[in-house]
Picture 1 (cartoon, rainbow, N blue to C red):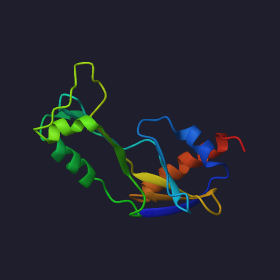
Picture 2: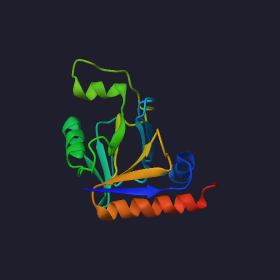
Picture 3: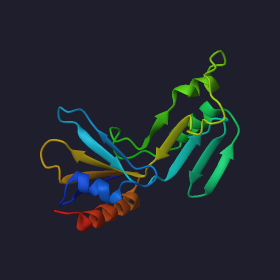
Picture 4: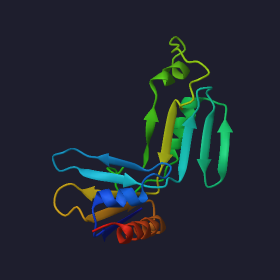
Length: 167
């Protein structure tokens, strides 16, 4: 686990505009009373649970499908994430659709038809997450990463984004 502090010399908005939009990018604002903002950019792995119950996994090894227990696949995906340097920094993010209950609870059958194309669950795992303080110097960021290499990759990405961003 690694923590790296860095001066980005630009606004958090400019950094996100320069980096966001990639698959799995996120921006979470913490509590208004001094909490931090967290950002993550390209993810290292993704899990999508399709409406037909098939789990699709994407990572450095490629894309594969599982036709097994969806809840167990979600639990395994979250548990396999290496820890980042701070327990407060999110590194597995995503959503669960209301209609997921149909796969988990046999007595509940939400109405879905063949046109339902959005996943029932979608998760992304990040090897580095940026923490931006909401109080004090918001240009001084902290990178929480699984290791020094992930922190260095994230720092290089931030420096490139800061150089391209308007001041």
